[in-house]
Image 1 (tube, rainbow, N blue to C red):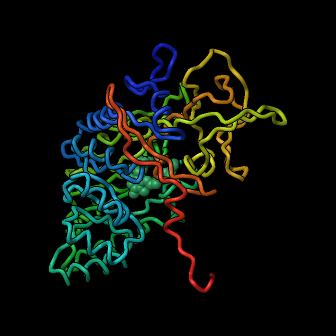
Image 2: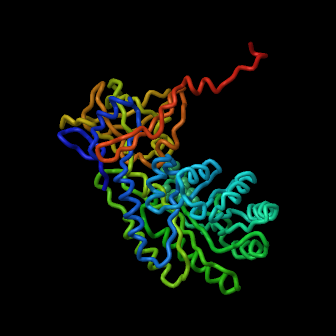
Image 3: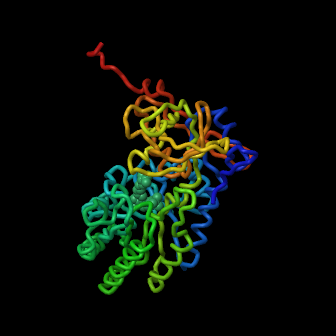
Amino acid sequence: MDHFSYQNGVLHAEQVPLSAIAEAVGTPVYVYSRATLERHAQVFREALSVLPKVHLAYAMKANPNLAVLKVLAAEGYGADIVSGGELERALAAGMPPADVVFSGVGKDAAEMARALEAGLGQFNLESEEEGVELAAIAAVKGKRAVCTLRVNPDVDAGTHAKISTGKAENKFGVAYDRAAGIYARLSSLENLEMRGLAVHIGSQITDLEPSRQAFVKMGGLMRDLRGQGFTVTHMDLGGGLGVPYRAGEVLPDPAAYGAMVADVTRDWDATIMFEPGRVIAGNTGVLLTRVIRVKPGASSPFVIVDAAMNDLARPAMYDAWHDFAAVEPSGDRMTANIAGPICESSDTFAMGRDIDAVAAGDLAVFRTAGAYGATMANTYNSRPLVPEVMVDGTRWAIVANRIEPATILAAETVPDWLD
Ligand code: LLP
């Protein structure tokens, strides 16, 4: 459920007509609904309230906008971060450092040092080498780093290959068969406090079975480690729960996910940690765009919109589907290809799709664009960096400015030997 709805024939974000935002800010622009964000945060928390001990770390890579983080911090979420930049965002949003988890295969020495200084809650180590390096950095600082070991369970998440992370050939975590040995070695290092295991098998997962299999495997490993006398108090089950991108699509919801986790982890006696991203932020946002013109195509016309693959990369990168809807639909329909202005064929949002009939100048949205939308935007073709707006009831505010090509050009310099 979200708070984007038609009122008097005009698509609104909560009580604000999207046409008013387009008028004031221009297009393309991402528009987020605070009420939707809060609702998703609450629904996910509620779904997991069946577990005795839970820690929620929002995977901010999905949408790291500071206003979004503020809302989630107020909802009691910590963060899952993957870079020094994300750490600074978590701190800027007022998230307690102890509630922040640091994932990622390539944490560098400076990032690990800064995280230790900031009092980061947990490092999810992705290799033995990383653990040894972190222990050395912690020793110099006279600190102990609290860690889990991320394990690759070799389970196919059944999602797009580019967002699948839990198969043996993927770069993430340590091999399942080697995990116990590595855990033992890292537990012997004085400046590491190994307290558990972590797993994350992929994103936009639309079937609970692969996650169940992975969690069952992790439970087995947890028991082995405890049997060998090691401490395992925390089990981080990652993120990955998918969201419906097409109207009418029905997927396992957070409650079904929570019930599955409760079943698998019944006798774990551990704090169960989660790193949800998309399920929190996806439905919270739309990408608002204006139709530049409609031109004939071989089989269907091309609707050329002012948003492009640099603003919303998902269709170009993962063949992802985002529902398209007119802000003021006439009731007529058309079959069309939807494309942006960028000079490559991958800048196509949809082919031969049945959509609201639109014409030059009309406003429209790509729905479910709150996760992995603005954060993956870039300035390809020297386009501006897309702005973001948050709506709260009848009020709204720009929460990220449009960065104009001139600002980006100003950061470039020509060496004097070229003059
Ligand atoms: N934890 C870890 C360690 C992750 O790598 C990810 C996502 C998450 C949690 C959050 O997963 P979620 O709950 O959002 O599925 N750009 C792609 C998605 C990449 C996801 C990367 N890792 C897309 O647009 O579909």
